[in-house]
Image (cartoon, rainbow, N blue to C red; front, side, top):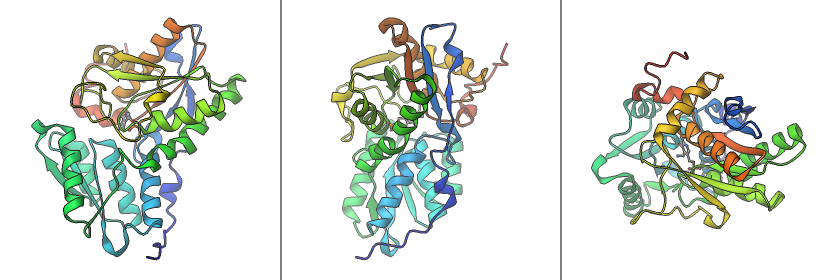
Length: 313
Ligand code: PMP
């Protein structure tokens, strides 16, 4: 089948053009370490998921998977769903998302506003059930749906290998004269950790890759505690890259978010978790320079009460 003509979209062209900043909030906590991060909330869809979703969508169009009005189908707990809905609308691709019914109102409304079809699953069944439901639908209706499968799609980690990893490596090396000692990432699909991890270790094999593992799920949007019985390990996650796993408690991640907000970085709880984990490894492992990402905007968590009662004093 002839590949569909992919219309250029200036909106997709904006993906990944986000600043790399030095996180000054940690100076008092880990004075010997410099921490750098990309501000992914400034992507057009408000999160790091814009990078893999834009790439997966364009590759699927180029391969002809979405020809003849076939719908792009995936499961998402939030940020990826917003990116799929946004870019699907921009490119004229119909999108169907399987989302647990307890996703926040602001997320569901935003996805619906972009014209995507939503299939809500029973929140009591958990997120893995939504993944299974997307898989079942694509099996039963192969003519209607093309299953993008962000947990297994190699274009997910490749997006981070080609963009996020390069931005961190180039930006930090040109600022400090050296590559970072370590990269700290969370794990949702494992795309960020695998793509950036491969890029950094290929350039400098001694770079340490640290996985921050939150204590509760879905307390930190998009991040999943690994290693629990019955958990699905994402197919694209390359666990051999991981040098250390650092558990993070929500009660530490949230004050870190408030601290970041007071330095001009209005970001979500997974950013607080990653910066907290970076501080810990900086102190315990004596690291001098660490890279991480601030995965999404704090705007997305207003309705959760994350910011209530914090006036910066
Ligand atoms: N943080 C947030 C806020 C996310 O939405 C996600 C992805 N769902 C991640 C971190 C983890 O990214 P990845 O899927 O690349 O492992």
